[in-house]
Amino acid sequence: MITPKTKAILLNSPVILPGMVINRDILEKVSEIAKEHNLFIISDELYERIYYLTEENI
Image (cartoon, rainbow, N blue to C red; front, top):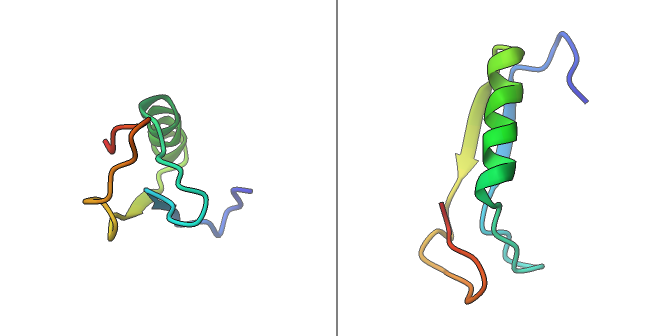
């Protein structure tokens, strides 16, 4: 939920436990929302070197 107090969106990809990588469509939508609401995007890419066979880390 975005409120007047919201300053940023935190992303973590890939997500280790479920093995999910955030895909390009979702990243573009998050980017649009951040621009609309003047928010920062904080991206935790600690595990960016871990790739899953079905997805590409963007």
